Image (cartoon, one colour):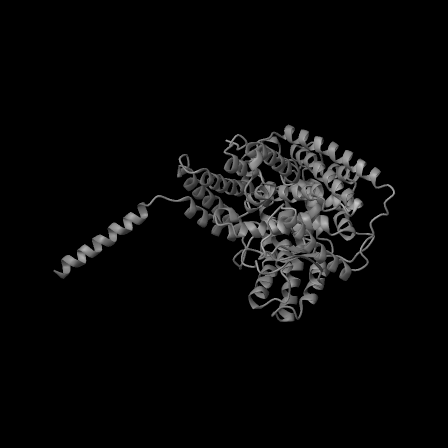
Length: 556
């Protein structure tokens, strides 16, 4: 009898196991598995919107590791293609498209734009950007954070060795930029380590020793690039086919490069004309004065952030939940000041929603670059774009979205489009009525974002060199030489990013207009903006499909 019962028990277990294994895959399970994998392997970038919480430990960019990621991606793609979303509700079909976008982004990184084998700056991002990103979280650092900082320093030599083995005739302009960026790197790292003493749990001797090993590896990498420069090719462009693939599969943008150029040029004309009107209107208005010191700057920004939140609520523009913390400016700590390899801000993260966002600012000076100079005149434009109601606020809402699939970054079109849309929306709503010259700043920002489209497309298609793009921005915005060059470098190495501000905003404006026409008297601006911000990680073509039932802008 016991044998029979045991056999029945074993048979039951086998049947249940087979039933579990036979259960069809779900979109939710695929998304959970993918994002856990992505947190381990996503490359670091100098952008801030797409930062994610990652498990700690050593990063590996060896060929074997990259080959394994490619195999993993093939597995995720196969699971995604096996799903049949045709009969799903539209919101779930949107989620399906989102996971497709995320998978395509990995394919873009590994194959379509393989910076890991064509751009030395990629390895600076995997080393020094990774370190700087860890330091944007405010000090002091407890034991786990201290160990992660140390691990990222210790990881630098092995990643650079892997980079040296992976790079295959990188474009000379990319190699030159990387070599220049590493100028004085040993002294910068030593100053960083010195400033960190007392703020971590690390022993000074172990921190200094690891920093010296990192500096040795970085200087060796720099010298290798310098030695290779005379023999490297000059062409940086990825080409039309790769650019269109990005637009269709990652950004989910239904436009051709020529259509993007036409949209950018039209917006450039509009911005220049409006700036001219504003300057003529304000010719007798005293100019804005730059803030006198950091403390005054910080206090002014805090007061104006509260005013912006109140303005949004009182004008019935956007709902600002009380749980959302504050966007603040803070002096740049010395250990960050020495590193210039990432955006110096901390948008917090999904597990740190109870902490204030921080934008680290330099000392006020007449030598400030384009964006900092504008912020020192009036902190509201940068607060509107980066803080509230911009990126920080949008990310907070997205991290708390009841749909877990929509909590993650997919493409900058929606995020940067919202940030840019917020600027003009607040201008038209009257936020800057008290400061005529701040309105000029907003219109000049509009000129820059329109020009970014042209620079982005022409760099990708090979119609601009890096130097031509930098000079074009410097003359046409206008802006300082250093900022123009930084922008051109970023756009050249990462095609498709620069156009997202302008094209994303234009998509939002059409989305708003079509919603207003469809809803008529039922249209409510606050309700529209609440939907837009809540789903701020979702490409605009998908948002309009969900809200309006219109899939005509969703690439097939």
